[in-house]
Image (cartoon, rainbow over all chains, first blue to last red; front, side):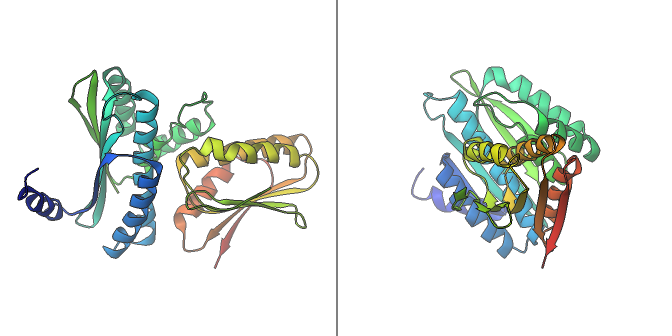
Length: 178
Length: 120
């Protein structure tokens, strides 16, 4: 990035209502610090108490999902721990959008899960959540609740896309509107 | 049992006089299963010994923590069905509707005695 490009980049983020954006290697410490900043920013931008915690909750699920996925599945791959997350204010709503690399063979099952969530109504999402709460999970596996919880907290269906990448990986973007 | 809270884990403290284990604060550690494992093992032993109350006074939990708490509830339910004297209490601030909703949902399927208490 050239000397004059950062200013343009910063203006672009501000114009699009980006309250906070992080691009780099995720760690528990980074997630914690960003989470604190996010709560303050959302509150200061006029978000009510439940909204602050909904946005924070979606942020925690997205970033912890990325962190656990990349450390479990992409260990040793160059730049694998990199992810990007942005909190955006759009009118009276908040958007949490994140992206990370994902192994090509994982894209189809992930899209299948997301499509099923997008079709589900509130009652179906609650049933899925309860079922997954009781599901047995193996050592090292995640609880598998994050995507369902995000779909429940969202005010519109989750949106997502896959962009082709290299080294057998694609780039996955998830956008959740609270 | 006496675990001090950190910025992403709750305090877990047993009060002998009231036989109550209180879990208080926010819970979103990097690995919730690791954090809750000793608590689950301790509760498993203690719940069958004599009167036992599990009190949740959390203000935020990530989904892995919720799953671990559900596991605690399941253990208490099993102990209850085998004759143990247990109670699950969920405390929430009356202004915190998210934590009330979470409490209602988690207590819904519990067979053991339970209380949902609003605090001012």
